[in-house]
Image (cartoon, rainbow, N blue to C red; front, top):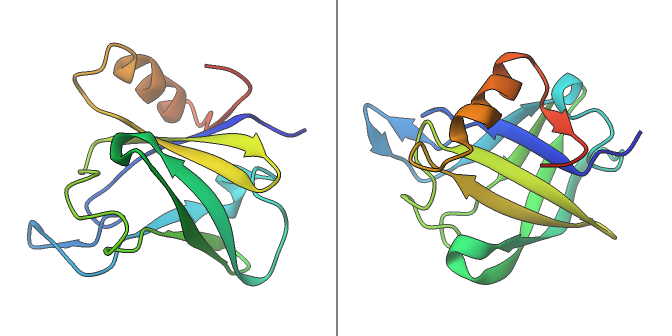
Length: 129
């Protein structure tokens, strides 16, 4: 089944923080078990189009896949540190044709707790929001 959305709560490690300071690389680690067939199957790395509304831009972001973990590479030059912070929830919407939208859900957002509950129930893939 193809799902429309993937959600993940971002950790300091995902965002490249070391000793509380953002680092040079931000690789969001996504377990292959968590995203199922949300991304098409591939090996190595592949570039996908990501709309990022909070930056009002569309970027080509790299997704790297191994047997167990997929890394979404948030290039520091494209997605400046501080765009996403630890505890934010990352919502990725599948727009079709290998196009995605990357949405930031902050703690202050009304639906934050609803998304957090889904994540805690290991429901990272959802059909509608």
